[in-house]
Length: 231
Image (cartoon, rainbow, N blue to C red; front, side):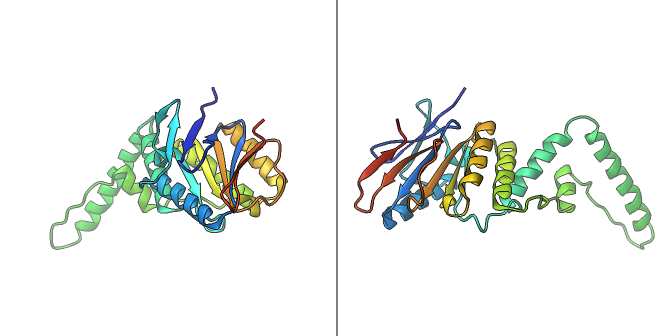
């Protein structure tokens, strides 16, 4: 089933629709409108108030729970603190299954024996707390390895991580067509279709013709609204 996220704003006649079957572009040639919409999407996905309304099947959704935004393709990091916290949470859940919980208990027992021997050599009493799974994971500085050589690989890795850890249903990218060629974009679109996540590209201009997978709402310099590839 192709779930469609619909985004409304009072200054847009045409709602923004996010579906894995096509890629939505919002091209804002007016600089003030470009800044306004990027700021609104950034605020929405951070969980702050904005003038955008997000719906699925006619029901409001929380964009901070279901979406991700990359405003700067040069400086986003998989090892961001928020992403690492999601990773730790996922690993803690996995530790509750199978023999992992028993192995953690064994580690704590071994640490307890080590500390008892160490503390016994001192002329005063000491106590300590057993490590929780979360504390153990944090103490090892668990993080994502850099397994990519190109921006496309980094973006795909990020999408995979956020789909797995946050169950994201859509991603918003700013000026992505300025840094990825058509071949790379096609590979990205194909990957998102396989993962069944929606893509919204917010661009400051139409830098080249649309592909068959793209549809665009274009807001011109004088605030006219033009649609392309809407059939």
